[in-house]
Length: 262
Image 1 (cartoon, one colour):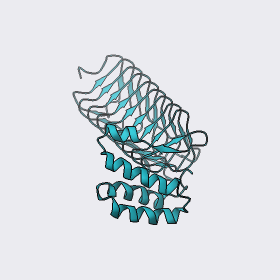
Image 2 (spheres, rainbow, N blue to C red):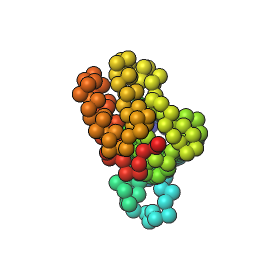
Image 3 (cartoon, helix red, strand yellow):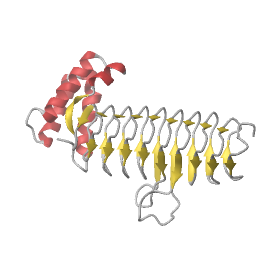
Image 4 (cartoon, rainbow, N blue to C red):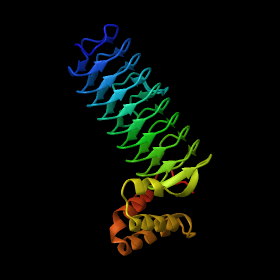
């Protein structure tokens, strides 16, 4: 294949579309499949049962699909699935899943993963996410669509971060972060909503104001979480343009197993 550098080691059992480019000294294992338009830089290692969609870009020195960093892992067949149009920058590490969870680590579409990011076993990431340099996800972390994690953010295992949420630089997240909320500090605490991000994504002023009211019900009204959920439900009927977003906040809280940041 013309797109594979002569020094690259691509196992004959790997399934690569003819348009895939593989740079110098990269290594592709036997159980890897890579779809059209994807570009693999130099010194990249892609291993394990790993499937990669169309039009992704992997910069040099990334490690993709290696065994999970979990002492319970005993070689069970697990997977890494990567969607389309993702950018994975230098020195990132994405590990396969474990048998103790779904057995698969997933990265969706159109994500921007900056240098030195670690995505551990069984993480489930949505679409349009930005992980700034050195963001670190422990095992079993879930990130919703449009999440932004600031540089050096660390996320404890099993934490969920809701859609459109963000973290400040060096945030240490040990509990769930509801949708739209900004988390900051060590340990991370709520610091308002991600209003600037919502503006950039086309949310109307009315929708942003309704989300702010939802935030105040959760964090500023002195309500227990059960009462806050009831108040959010009532607010949904008052704000039809933003009802779906208030419902997203309410349902996230109801499903939280670690509790939300407070």
